[in-house]
Image 1 (cartoon, helix red, strand yellow):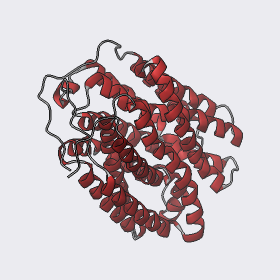
Image 2 (cartoon, one colour):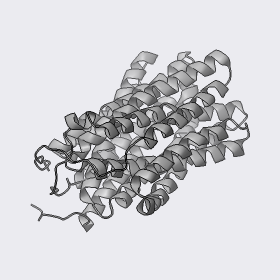
Image 3 (cartoon, helix red, strand yellow):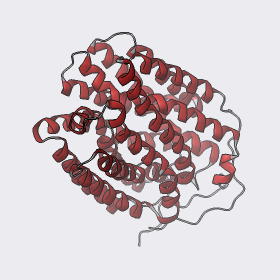
Length: 403
């Protein structure tokens, strides 16, 4: 039995390390799907729009189930949630590697990877946020750099493995490796100290709150556009003459730039305030799609990936701090989980619609223009979030999470 630990203590940084590793493998695998798109479409004889449904179901699952995994980590603690995610990830990708029909692979991949990410993302962001107060933005920023570095490493690795082993064996390798890492994270993670002070909003109070609803709308609009490049940017680059591995590396560039964004914009947020920095991330992401539409050279695509990645990194790192500051931390898992269902709905819509637009028109320009419009609309929506006093709930404090 460990003695009670305080927020901002050294034990919290162990949890940060576990969160980093869990997000590294889970998001690295999820965001490597662009490398699988062409070979899977060729084998199953499907178009980009249909095959993009793999990513759409996955993102819908991990953001949608975040509402459940967030509540679960508040009630049962992070260890059980991570172990469940490890089993789901390994089993799902193993089954996908054996799928003989597209719809079977769609279900096994979407549920396996989706549940794995859902169990590693929202719960761990909430747990890390609970371990810190003065350094919360920094701690969350370090944790979610695992998303960027995982994307940087796994997407090119997946492309190389597909060339050597085929997409089926690559799914198997990634699934087993990811399951082992998530299980190891579960062994070291601990729930945060029970916070004191005013209670956070209950979920019922949150959905009635104007600012919470505006955050939900802004996140959903941005997600429609944000996840299109993760699926379709490699295919666009190949169409423009890029090498397949170099094309897949563009997703890695987004990941690398997002790592810088998560750390640097966390520093900016400390000076400007978290809400203002969060709004700046929306503007950066929205305007980045103009770069994608400017030209077809590989260098332009790299610049686009960098700008999008920086804004995306800050969006991921600062968002939990905005929610924690405005609505409290005692129910942060559930509050973040419900909020992120907006990203699930948006990402589920964006990639298939973009793929269908490409298939129908033979051009990526309509999809790019749509992303630009939606990104700017999301910025307008997040500008309407108030800057007044933080909101606190009226409910009682929740009981400590199970260890």
